[in-house]
Length: 361
Ligand code: GLA
Image (cartoon, rainbow, N blue to C red):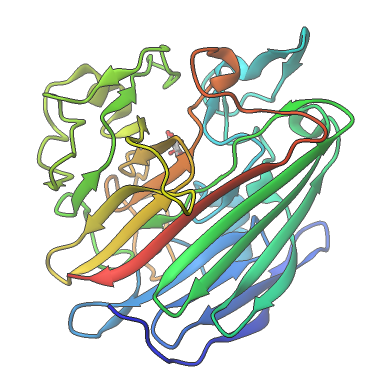
C-alpha cells in the first residue's frame, strides 16, 4: 500500500474513572484508513481498525469497551508494559551488590513489572500532530522503589501513526538516584481476521530469528541460546502458526504452544531498526509487519486465554484466538550475564523503537 492523502485526525473522549477517582481518557487517531484508540489507563492500545483486502474495516486488536474489565480481567491487552517486560525469576535480582525483590505475580516469578505494573497506571497524555504523523505521548513517573525497582524512572512512550499505515512506538526512559533495570514493551494482541473471530492457527508467520531462549517449567529462560533450525520454532520460511503447534516438542509442552523469546537475526539498519516478523491472515489478507531496535521478541500464541470472559465484541476469547509479539530484551536478563544488559544508570538514556505496519496481501 502506497502513501495516501487521507486526513490525519485525533480526538479525545472520556473512558471512565478509576476506583481512586482518576479520570481515564481514550484518544482515537486516524489517517483516514487505519484508526487506533488508546487509553490513558496503561497507555493501552484499545482498538486497531484496518481494512482487509476488499476494503472491509475491522478491529483486529483484543480489548474491552469499559475500564472495570481492563482493571479486573485484562491479560495485558494492548498494555504498555514496565518496568520489566516478561519474567524475572522469583522476582529477584542483584545490581551493584544490592538485592532487589519484585512482587511475585506469576507462579513463583514476577511477570511484566510485578503486581501493579505500568499497565495499571494512569498515564499523562500529550497529543503529537504534524503534517506526517498523528498520535500521543504518554508519560509516567515511577518513584524509587515502585514495585521494588530501584531509582526514580521517568518514562515517555510515543505512539504515532503515519500516512503509510505504520504505527510507531518510541520508548524513552531515564533514571535518577540509583541504577536500575528496564525492559519496556507493548502487549497488543492481534487477530488479523478481526478480534473475536476464532483461532489464529491459520495465520502465516515469517520470523527473522535464527535462535530462541528455551525455558524451564516456570517459563524462565534456562540461559541457553538454541538454534531454531529443524524445530517447530523455525519460521524462517513463512509457515502457518498452527502447523506445528501440536508437535511433540518439550518447549511447546511447557509453553502450551508458543510463549518464547526469539533472538532476532542480523543487525539493525541505518534507521536503527531490523525486520522482526510478518504475520499474514490468508482469508481476509491483512498483514502486520514488525520492525524493532530490540534484540528479541516474545512470540505468544494466546495460550492462556480460556474463554472465561468476553471482549469488546461480546465474544469469548479462547486459547489461540490471538497472538502477541512483544519486542524486548530477553526475559530474566538481570539474572543472565550472557544476555544483552537491561541495566540503566543515572545519566544514561534508555530508548527503544518498534513499528507495526498494517497492510494486505
Ligand atoms: C507474556 C507471557 C505469557 C503470558 C502473557 C500474558 O506473553 O510470556 O506467558 O503471561 O504475557 O498473559
